[in-house]
Image 1 (cartoon, rainbow, N blue to C red):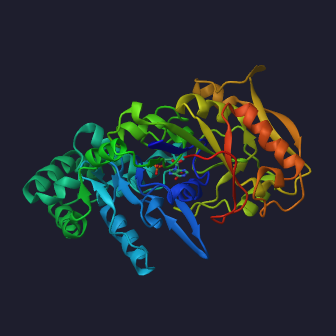
Image 2 (cartoon, rainbow, N blue to C red):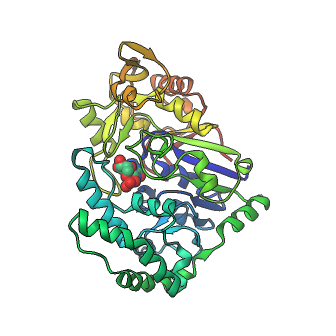
Length: 427
Ligand code: IMP
Protein backbone atom coordinates (compact mmCIF):
# COMPACT_ATOMS: atom_id res chain seq x y z
CA UNK A 1 0.00 0.00 0.00
CA UNK A 2 2.64 2.58 -0.94
CA UNK A 3 0.81 5.78 -1.98
CA UNK A 4 -2.37 7.28 -0.55
CA UNK A 5 -4.11 10.56 -1.31
CA UNK A 6 -6.03 12.31 1.42
CA UNK A 7 -8.21 15.22 0.34
CA UNK A 8 -11.21 17.31 1.31
CA UNK A 9 -14.50 16.02 -0.10
CA UNK A 10 -16.42 19.30 0.40
CA UNK A 11 -15.27 22.95 0.45
CA UNK A 12 -12.19 22.42 2.62
CA UNK A 13 -11.76 22.63 6.39
CA UNK A 14 -13.03 19.07 6.83
CA UNK A 15 -10.39 18.29 9.45
CA UNK A 16 -7.70 16.90 7.18
CA UNK A 17 -4.91 17.72 9.61
CA UNK A 18 -6.31 15.29 12.14
CA UNK A 19 -6.62 12.54 9.55
CA UNK A 20 -3.11 13.07 8.21
CA UNK A 21 -1.75 13.17 11.67
CA UNK A 22 -3.52 9.93 12.59
CA UNK A 23 -1.69 8.20 9.76
CA UNK A 24 1.52 10.15 10.33
CA UNK A 25 3.15 7.56 12.60
CA UNK A 26 3.02 4.86 9.94
CA UNK A 27 3.78 7.10 6.98
CA UNK A 28 7.29 7.73 5.65
CA UNK A 29 6.55 10.82 3.51
CA UNK A 30 3.73 13.39 3.71
CA UNK A 31 3.46 15.47 0.55
CA UNK A 32 1.59 18.67 -0.16
CA UNK A 33 0.84 18.85 -3.87
CA UNK A 34 -1.12 22.09 -4.44
CA UNK A 35 -2.23 25.34 -2.85
CA UNK A 36 -0.07 27.42 -0.55
CA UNK A 37 -0.48 29.22 2.73
CA UNK A 38 -4.20 29.61 2.03
CA UNK A 39 -4.65 26.21 3.66
CA UNK A 40 -5.16 25.79 7.37
CA UNK A 41 -4.60 22.57 9.26
CA UNK A 42 -5.20 22.39 12.98
CA UNK A 43 -3.43 19.47 14.59
CA UNK A 44 -3.80 18.70 18.28
CA UNK A 45 -0.93 16.70 19.80
CA UNK A 46 -1.42 16.05 23.52
CA UNK A 47 -2.26 19.42 25.04
CA UNK A 48 -0.54 21.28 22.20
CA UNK A 49 -2.45 22.78 19.30
CA UNK A 50 -0.64 23.57 16.06
CA UNK A 51 -2.05 25.66 13.21
CA UNK A 52 -0.19 24.99 9.96
CA UNK A 53 -0.78 26.83 6.72
CA UNK A 54 1.93 25.87 4.31
CA UNK A 55 3.86 23.01 5.86
CA UNK A 56 2.58 19.45 5.50
CA UNK A 57 1.08 18.26 8.77
CA UNK A 58 3.50 15.28 8.74
CA UNK A 59 6.09 17.74 10.02
CA UNK A 60 4.77 16.96 13.51
CA UNK A 61 5.44 13.23 13.24
CA UNK A 62 9.00 12.26 14.05
CA UNK A 63 10.29 9.80 11.45
CA UNK A 64 8.15 11.22 8.70
CA UNK A 65 9.65 13.27 5.85
CA UNK A 66 7.48 16.29 4.98
CA UNK A 67 7.57 17.29 1.32
CA UNK A 68 6.39 20.43 -0.47
CA UNK A 69 5.82 19.30 -4.05
CA UNK A 70 6.20 21.17 -7.33
CA UNK A 71 2.46 21.93 -7.48
CA UNK A 72 2.52 24.11 -4.35
CA UNK A 73 2.99 27.89 -4.41
CA UNK A 74 5.41 28.92 -1.69
CA UNK A 75 5.67 32.24 0.08
CA UNK A 76 9.26 32.08 1.37
CA UNK A 77 8.63 34.46 4.26
CA UNK A 78 5.72 32.31 5.46
CA UNK A 79 7.75 29.14 5.03
CA UNK A 80 10.58 30.47 7.18
CA UNK A 81 8.31 31.91 9.86
CA UNK A 82 6.31 28.65 10.14
CA UNK A 83 9.56 26.71 10.44
CA UNK A 84 10.99 28.98 13.11
CA UNK A 85 7.68 28.95 15.01
CA UNK A 86 7.82 25.15 15.15
CA UNK A 87 11.52 25.13 16.06
CA UNK A 88 10.79 27.43 19.00
CA UNK A 89 8.28 24.84 20.23
CA UNK A 90 10.87 22.07 19.95
CA UNK A 91 9.66 20.50 16.68
CA UNK A 92 12.46 19.15 14.47
CA UNK A 93 11.90 20.48 10.95
CA UNK A 94 15.24 19.51 9.43
CA UNK A 95 13.81 16.70 7.27
CA UNK A 96 11.63 19.02 5.16
CA UNK A 97 12.10 18.69 1.38
CA UNK A 98 11.07 21.47 -0.99
CA UNK A 99 10.71 21.04 -4.74
CA UNK A 100 12.97 23.35 -6.74
CA UNK A 101 10.16 23.52 -9.31
CA UNK A 102 7.56 24.91 -6.90
CA UNK A 103 6.55 28.47 -7.74
CA UNK A 104 7.05 31.36 -5.36
CA UNK A 105 4.48 33.77 -4.00
CA UNK A 106 6.18 37.15 -3.98
CA UNK A 107 4.98 40.35 -2.32
CA UNK A 108 3.49 41.56 -5.63
CA UNK A 109 1.24 38.50 -5.81
CA UNK A 110 -0.34 39.29 -2.46
CA UNK A 111 -0.73 42.96 -3.49
CA UNK A 112 -2.44 41.95 -6.72
CA UNK A 113 -4.70 39.47 -4.93
CA UNK A 114 -5.99 42.23 -2.65
CA UNK A 115 -6.41 44.97 -5.25
CA UNK A 116 -8.12 42.61 -7.68
CA UNK A 117 -10.62 41.55 -5.04
CA UNK A 118 -11.32 45.16 -4.18
CA UNK A 119 -11.79 45.93 -7.87
CA UNK A 120 -14.28 43.06 -8.26
CA UNK A 121 -16.50 44.66 -5.60
CA UNK A 122 -19.59 42.58 -4.97
CA UNK A 123 -18.42 39.99 -7.51
CA UNK A 124 -15.35 39.23 -5.40
CA UNK A 125 -14.28 35.64 -4.77
CA UNK A 126 -13.53 36.14 -1.08
CA UNK A 127 -9.94 34.89 -1.46
CA UNK A 128 -7.60 34.54 1.48
CA UNK A 129 -5.59 37.49 0.08
CA UNK A 130 -2.38 35.47 0.22
CA UNK A 131 -1.46 35.88 -3.46
CA UNK A 132 -2.39 32.32 -4.42
CA UNK A 133 -4.35 33.10 -7.62
CA UNK A 134 -1.84 35.65 -9.01
CA UNK A 135 1.07 33.26 -8.40
CA UNK A 136 -0.68 30.41 -10.25
CA UNK A 137 -1.67 32.85 -13.00
CA UNK A 138 2.01 33.70 -13.50
CA UNK A 139 2.88 30.01 -13.58
CA UNK A 140 0.37 29.39 -16.37
CA UNK A 141 1.42 32.60 -18.16
CA UNK A 142 5.03 31.36 -17.95
CA UNK A 143 6.26 34.40 -16.04
CA UNK A 144 6.40 32.70 -12.64
CA UNK A 145 9.41 32.62 -10.31
CA UNK A 146 10.41 29.19 -9.06
CA UNK A 147 12.24 28.15 -5.92
CA UNK A 148 15.33 27.25 -7.98
CA UNK A 149 15.51 30.82 -9.33
CA UNK A 150 16.47 32.01 -5.85
CA UNK A 151 19.91 30.56 -6.39
CA UNK A 152 20.79 32.39 -9.60
CA UNK A 153 20.78 36.12 -9.02
CA UNK A 154 20.96 37.28 -12.65
CA UNK A 155 18.21 34.93 -13.81
CA UNK A 156 16.09 35.97 -10.84
CA UNK A 157 16.33 39.65 -11.80
CA UNK A 158 15.48 38.92 -15.44
CA UNK A 159 12.45 36.88 -14.43
CA UNK A 160 11.18 39.38 -11.88
CA UNK A 161 11.54 42.16 -14.47
CA UNK A 162 9.58 40.10 -16.99
CA UNK A 163 6.89 39.38 -14.42
CA UNK A 164 6.58 43.01 -13.36
CA UNK A 165 6.64 44.62 -16.82
CA UNK A 166 2.94 44.18 -17.41
CA UNK A 167 1.87 44.17 -13.75
CA UNK A 168 3.40 47.56 -13.09
CA UNK A 169 1.40 49.01 -15.96
CA UNK A 170 -1.76 47.51 -14.47
CA UNK A 171 -0.92 48.60 -10.94
CA UNK A 172 -0.14 52.17 -11.93
CA UNK A 173 -2.68 52.78 -14.69
CA UNK A 174 -5.62 50.70 -13.60
CA UNK A 175 -5.37 50.42 -9.84
CA UNK A 176 -3.68 53.75 -9.22
CA UNK A 177 -0.93 52.08 -7.21
CA UNK A 178 2.79 52.71 -7.13
CA UNK A 179 4.88 50.54 -9.48
CA UNK A 180 6.99 47.87 -7.76
CA UNK A 181 10.75 47.93 -8.16
CA UNK A 182 12.12 44.61 -9.53
CA UNK A 183 15.41 45.13 -7.70
CA UNK A 184 13.62 45.56 -4.37
CA UNK A 185 11.75 42.30 -4.92
CA UNK A 186 14.96 40.52 -5.88
CA UNK A 187 16.75 41.83 -2.78
CA UNK A 188 13.96 40.59 -0.56
CA UNK A 189 13.89 37.15 -2.22
CA UNK A 190 17.67 36.80 -2.08
CA UNK A 191 17.45 37.44 1.64
CA UNK A 192 15.62 34.09 1.98
CA UNK A 193 17.81 32.07 -0.37
CA UNK A 194 20.46 30.83 2.07
CA UNK A 195 17.93 29.78 4.68
CA UNK A 196 15.89 27.84 2.12
CA UNK A 197 18.68 26.21 0.12
CA UNK A 198 19.20 23.28 2.48
CA UNK A 199 15.62 22.06 2.00
CA UNK A 200 15.57 22.12 -1.81
CA UNK A 201 15.62 18.74 -3.52
CA UNK A 202 14.49 16.79 -6.59
CA UNK A 203 11.32 15.72 -4.82
CA UNK A 204 9.88 13.90 -7.86
CA UNK A 205 12.88 11.60 -8.00
CA UNK A 206 12.90 11.05 -4.24
CA UNK A 207 9.17 10.26 -4.06
CA UNK A 208 9.24 7.81 -6.97
CA UNK A 209 12.24 6.05 -5.46
CA UNK A 210 10.47 5.92 -2.09
CA UNK A 211 7.41 4.28 -3.68
CA UNK A 212 9.64 1.78 -5.50
CA UNK A 213 11.24 0.98 -2.13
CA UNK A 214 7.77 0.25 -0.65
CA UNK A 215 7.80 3.30 1.61
CA UNK A 216 4.41 4.71 2.56
CA UNK A 217 3.78 8.07 0.87
CA UNK A 218 0.78 10.18 1.82
CA UNK A 219 -0.38 13.02 -0.44
CA UNK A 220 -2.19 15.67 1.53
CA UNK A 221 -4.61 17.93 -0.34
CA UNK A 222 -5.29 21.51 0.73
CA UNK A 223 -8.76 23.15 0.36
CA UNK A 224 -11.32 20.67 -1.01
CA UNK A 225 -13.02 19.08 -4.02
CA UNK A 226 -15.54 21.90 -4.58
CA UNK A 227 -12.77 24.51 -4.47
CA UNK A 228 -10.94 22.77 -7.34
CA UNK A 229 -10.36 25.13 -10.26
CA UNK A 230 -11.66 22.49 -12.73
CA UNK A 231 -14.19 20.49 -10.71
CA UNK A 232 -15.36 23.00 -8.12
CA UNK A 233 -17.90 25.80 -8.07
CA UNK A 234 -15.97 27.98 -10.55
CA UNK A 235 -15.24 30.91 -10.32
CA UNK A 236 -15.69 30.64 -6.54
CA UNK A 237 -12.74 28.29 -6.21
CA UNK A 238 -9.05 28.31 -5.48
CA UNK A 239 -6.54 28.37 -8.36
CA UNK A 240 -5.23 24.81 -8.13
CA UNK A 241 -6.38 21.18 -8.26
CA UNK A 242 -7.04 19.73 -4.79
CA UNK A 243 -8.79 16.74 -6.47
CA UNK A 244 -6.95 13.43 -6.73
CA UNK A 245 -5.42 14.08 -10.15
CA UNK A 246 -3.64 17.09 -8.66
CA UNK A 247 -1.61 14.75 -6.47
CA UNK A 248 0.03 13.37 -9.62
CA UNK A 249 0.74 16.65 -11.44
CA UNK A 250 1.70 18.37 -8.20
CA UNK A 251 4.30 15.77 -7.26
CA UNK A 252 5.46 14.01 -10.41
CA UNK A 253 4.14 10.63 -9.29
CA UNK A 254 2.05 8.81 -11.91
CA UNK A 255 -1.57 7.73 -11.35
CA UNK A 256 -0.74 4.02 -11.54
CA UNK A 257 1.30 4.44 -8.34
CA UNK A 258 -1.65 5.72 -6.26
CA UNK A 259 -3.29 2.93 -4.33
CA UNK A 260 -5.95 4.61 -2.23
CA UNK A 261 -7.82 7.92 -2.30
CA UNK A 262 -9.43 8.95 0.98
CA UNK A 263 -11.99 11.74 1.11
CA UNK A 264 -12.31 13.72 4.32
CA UNK A 265 -15.97 14.42 4.90
CA UNK A 266 -17.40 16.58 7.66
CA UNK A 267 -20.61 15.25 9.24
CA UNK A 268 -22.18 18.58 8.16
CA UNK A 269 -21.01 21.18 5.62
CA UNK A 270 -19.03 24.43 5.80
CA UNK A 271 -17.62 26.90 3.33
CA UNK A 272 -15.55 30.10 3.54
CA UNK A 273 -15.66 32.86 0.96
CA UNK A 274 -18.34 33.54 -1.64
CA UNK A 275 -20.22 31.13 -3.90
CA UNK A 276 -23.22 28.79 -3.93
CA UNK A 277 -23.93 26.51 -0.96
CA UNK A 278 -27.34 24.78 -1.18
CA UNK A 279 -27.62 23.54 2.43
CA UNK A 280 -26.40 26.77 4.04
CA UNK A 281 -28.27 27.71 7.23
CA UNK A 282 -29.06 31.27 8.26
CA UNK A 283 -30.82 30.38 11.52
CA UNK A 284 -29.90 29.28 15.03
CA UNK A 285 -28.94 25.79 13.79
CA UNK A 286 -26.27 27.38 11.61
CA UNK A 287 -25.06 29.45 14.56
CA UNK A 288 -24.99 26.34 16.74
CA UNK A 289 -22.93 24.35 14.20
CA UNK A 290 -20.50 27.28 13.98
CA UNK A 291 -20.02 27.69 17.70
CA UNK A 292 -20.01 23.99 18.68
CA UNK A 293 -17.83 23.06 15.70
CA UNK A 294 -15.47 26.03 16.18
CA UNK A 295 -16.06 26.98 12.56
CA UNK A 296 -13.73 29.93 12.27
CA UNK A 297 -10.99 29.90 9.62
CA UNK A 298 -7.51 28.82 10.77
CA UNK A 299 -5.93 31.02 8.10
CA UNK A 300 -8.07 34.14 8.02
CA UNK A 301 -10.17 33.89 11.20
CA UNK A 302 -13.31 34.44 9.10
CA UNK A 303 -16.61 32.85 10.17
CA UNK A 304 -17.28 29.73 8.16
CA UNK A 305 -20.71 29.45 6.56
CA UNK A 306 -22.43 26.35 8.00
CA UNK A 307 -25.11 23.94 6.77
CA UNK A 308 -26.38 20.38 6.90
CA UNK A 309 -24.70 17.39 5.31
CA UNK A 310 -25.09 17.25 1.53
CA UNK A 311 -25.01 13.74 0.06
CA UNK A 312 -25.13 15.06 -3.51
CA UNK A 313 -21.74 16.69 -2.93
CA UNK A 314 -20.31 13.62 -1.22
CA UNK A 315 -21.31 11.42 -4.17
CA UNK A 316 -19.80 13.93 -6.58
CA UNK A 317 -16.54 13.85 -4.59
CA UNK A 318 -16.53 10.06 -4.82
CA UNK A 319 -16.91 10.32 -8.59
CA UNK A 320 -14.37 13.02 -9.50
CA UNK A 321 -11.70 11.73 -7.12
CA UNK A 322 -12.29 7.99 -7.51
CA UNK A 323 -12.54 7.80 -3.72
CA UNK A 324 -11.87 4.44 -2.11
CA UNK A 325 -12.78 5.51 1.46
CA UNK A 326 -14.13 8.33 3.57
CA UNK A 327 -12.88 9.69 6.89
CA UNK A 328 -15.98 11.21 8.52
CA UNK A 329 -15.02 14.05 10.88
CA UNK A 330 -16.73 16.05 13.63
CA UNK A 331 -19.59 13.63 14.26
CA UNK A 332 -19.57 14.79 17.92
CA UNK A 333 -20.66 18.31 16.82
CA UNK A 334 -24.08 16.88 15.88
CA UNK A 335 -24.75 15.51 19.38
CA UNK A 336 -27.89 17.04 20.87
CA UNK A 337 -30.11 17.56 17.84
CA UNK A 338 -33.43 15.72 18.05
CA UNK A 339 -33.42 15.06 14.31
CA UNK A 340 -30.75 15.83 11.74
CA UNK A 341 -31.60 16.90 8.18
CA UNK A 342 -29.49 15.38 5.39
CA UNK A 343 -29.70 16.68 1.84
CA UNK A 344 -30.39 13.76 -0.52
CA UNK A 345 -31.20 15.61 -3.76
CA UNK A 346 -31.75 19.08 -5.19
CA UNK A 347 -34.81 20.62 -6.65
CA UNK A 348 -33.85 22.87 -9.55
CA UNK A 349 -36.62 24.88 -11.22
CA UNK A 350 -39.18 22.28 -10.12
CA UNK A 351 -37.12 19.24 -11.17
CA UNK A 352 -35.49 16.84 -8.76
CA UNK A 353 -31.90 15.70 -9.35
CA UNK A 354 -29.54 13.51 -7.35
CA UNK A 355 -26.42 14.57 -9.28
CA UNK A 356 -24.48 17.81 -8.94
CA UNK A 357 -25.51 19.98 -11.92
CA UNK A 358 -22.58 20.93 -14.18
CA UNK A 359 -24.35 24.17 -15.08
CA UNK A 360 -23.40 26.94 -12.64
CA UNK A 361 -26.79 28.72 -12.78
CA UNK A 362 -28.55 25.45 -11.95
CA UNK A 363 -26.31 24.98 -8.93
CA UNK A 364 -27.01 28.54 -7.79
CA UNK A 365 -30.75 27.76 -7.93
CA UNK A 366 -30.51 24.31 -6.31
CA UNK A 367 -32.82 23.88 -3.32
CA UNK A 368 -31.96 21.05 -0.94
CA UNK A 369 -34.38 18.13 -0.55
CA UNK A 370 -33.98 16.82 3.00
CA UNK A 371 -34.45 13.49 4.73
CA UNK A 372 -34.56 13.65 8.52
CA UNK A 373 -32.53 11.19 10.59
CA UNK A 374 -33.09 10.70 14.33
CA UNK A 375 -30.43 12.37 16.50
CA UNK A 376 -28.70 11.32 19.74
CA UNK A 377 -27.91 13.09 22.99
CA UNK A 378 -25.23 10.82 24.50
CA UNK A 379 -21.61 12.07 24.67
CA UNK A 380 -19.75 10.20 21.92
CA UNK A 381 -16.26 11.64 22.45
CA UNK A 382 -15.11 8.59 24.43
CA UNK A 383 -16.28 6.05 21.83
CA UNK A 384 -13.42 3.82 20.70
CA UNK A 385 -15.28 1.45 18.39
CA UNK A 386 -18.25 1.77 16.09
CA UNK A 387 -20.29 -0.35 18.51
CA UNK A 388 -19.65 2.23 21.29
CA UNK A 389 -21.68 4.81 19.35
CA UNK A 390 -25.37 5.26 20.22
CA UNK A 391 -27.65 3.41 17.79
CA UNK A 392 -28.85 6.64 16.13
CA UNK A 393 -25.28 7.85 15.59
CA UNK A 394 -24.44 4.47 14.03
CA UNK A 395 -27.46 4.78 11.77
CA UNK A 396 -26.45 8.35 10.79
CA UNK A 397 -22.99 7.12 9.75
CA UNK A 398 -24.35 4.11 7.88
CA UNK A 399 -26.90 6.22 6.02
CA UNK A 400 -24.23 8.73 4.99
CA UNK A 401 -22.06 5.86 3.80
CA UNK A 402 -24.84 4.40 1.65
CA UNK A 403 -25.61 7.81 0.18
CA UNK A 404 -22.01 8.82 -0.46
CA UNK A 405 -20.78 5.85 -2.46
CA UNK A 406 -17.65 4.77 -0.56
CA UNK A 407 -17.04 3.10 2.82
CA UNK A 408 -16.54 5.29 5.89
CA UNK A 409 -13.32 3.85 7.27
CA UNK A 410 -12.71 6.28 10.15
CA UNK A 411 -14.90 8.55 12.27
CA UNK A 412 -13.74 11.62 14.19
CA UNK A 413 -15.57 11.97 17.51
CA UNK A 414 -13.54 14.82 19.03
CA UNK A 415 -10.64 17.13 18.20
CA UNK A 416 -7.91 15.17 20.02
CA UNK A 417 -5.49 12.85 18.29
CA UNK A 418 -6.98 9.75 19.95
CA UNK A 419 -10.63 10.76 19.48
CA UNK A 420 -11.05 8.74 16.31
CA UNK A 421 -12.79 5.44 15.61
CA UNK A 422 -10.97 3.35 13.04
CA UNK A 423 -13.44 1.13 11.26
CA UNK A 424 -11.04 -0.19 8.57
CA UNK A 425 -7.31 0.39 8.52
CA UNK A 426 -6.05 2.79 5.85
CA UNK A 427 -2.73 0.94 5.60
P1 IMP B 1 -7.66 31.63 -2.52
O1 IMP B 1 -7.30 30.18 -2.41
O2 IMP B 1 -7.01 32.48 -1.45
O3 IMP B 1 -7.45 32.17 -3.90
O4 IMP B 1 -9.24 31.75 -2.24
C1 IMP B 1 -10.20 31.21 -3.16
C2 IMP B 1 -11.37 30.58 -2.41
O5 IMP B 1 -10.94 29.40 -1.73
C3 IMP B 1 -11.99 31.47 -1.32
O6 IMP B 1 -13.37 31.21 -1.27
C4 IMP B 1 -11.32 30.97 -0.03
O7 IMP B 1 -12.10 31.24 1.10
C5 IMP B 1 -11.26 29.49 -0.34
N1 IMP B 1 -10.18 28.80 0.39
C6 IMP B 1 -8.86 28.86 0.16
N2 IMP B 1 -8.20 28.07 1.01
C7 IMP B 1 -9.11 27.47 1.78
C8 IMP B 1 -9.04 26.50 2.83
O8 IMP B 1 -7.98 26.00 3.22
N3 IMP B 1 -10.23 26.14 3.37
C9 IMP B 1 -11.40 26.63 2.94
N4 IMP B 1 -11.52 27.52 1.97
C10 IMP B 1 -10.39 27.95 1.39
